[in-house]
Length: 373
Ligand code: NPG
Image 1: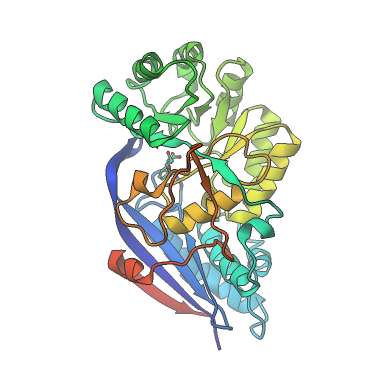
Image 2 (image 1 turned 90 degrees about the vertical axis):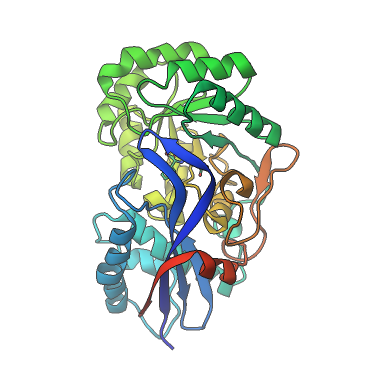
């Protein structure tokens, strides 16, 4: 029996619009993959790709096309079809592909999930980690005004979140941070994320954030601006965190060497999957660079896998992995709820650990493609 890959584009209504310096989403376009291997075992994965190349150079239609026209043919050439494919085999087959981490990561993760389900092994065990509650945070989009921001943040704190990330952009930076500090105190772990909205010419302005005792400032400059980030970090003010600049292990190592990354946000989908994420984590740990697990408004599939990754010891900062209710009224898998300590725990099942709700997947699907290997 040959393996089958199904790529589905879902349209998932968000409970609240999510606005960043890059634009606003009210419905999240999500690309999910299901890989059914030659034994009939199905694995699932979810991409961070957006409808447009907004945060990352890849985007949903491009990822689909790359998988269909480049990656699947490479797999067909390079693997022994008598044996079910493994994530390691996928990684080897794609070793010469120079880019496209989102496309590679989606396929590798779906195959990894199938492989682990076949062996009845949870992703946490595969990562040589230990399942435990994970401290998580909430990422707050840019609202129309400060009162709305304060009511959103207050609501999230009541929900039990213990770390807040504010989206900032030119014109929406010092005032919202000051307002949140004044309303909720200096002890609240607070960080900001600019999604590349500033340039190194703004360093004097960004330095004014130092007085607010932020955990970090994330990706203030364009993703290629490693030197600018290093210059900002060299001031030894608010720690500088990289997100969009890190699309690979090499990117992470270069940024660390240049001194441009006090912290790294690891988004598994953005760096090509969980194997590379583990490597980036290890390099960061060895270099004393704390990491946190980033998010892209995941469904239950991505959230479950990210929680497993975040059990690794270098993830010392709370991740962007919130409860289901922060994102969706209805999801395509089980709901995740914060415990009394503001933590979430990875599910215990094999692979990414959840049963995907196929009816819900069907309900949210707007397009699907089935490919065979
Ligand atoms: O909780 O998943 C979450 C949202 C975290 O802010 C978050 N994600 O810039 O990191 C980001 C942002 C994002 C969302 C990026 C969607 C890309 C797509």
